[in-house]
Length: 135
Image (cartoon, rainbow, N blue to C red):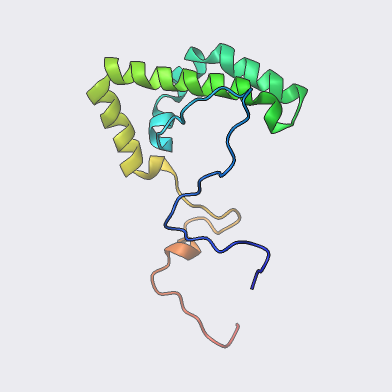
């Protein structure tokens, strides 16, 4: 049993007890799941290109996460702006697209590398045979 960590209740979300430093601008989180973000990914790359390039250049200069907080905040604000604009212009169509991605697992499938072709994956077997004897 680990004794070096506090006991945490997984039903409650974690709240950081320390406030952000004064020099870091306040910005709300994007507040979406991965499906809406995947739905706007191509538009996000073009719409926020300048901010993304600044952020990536900052990350290449210094790997310290605190060094690039300002650039990261700009990317987040740009994403929020894009989500708001797409929601206004393409409301129902965009909702239908990302909800389709969400309900269909975003076309992701669990495949174990090196498993035999044409046979079900080990996690897909309904009645795996477990015996004491190995053949």
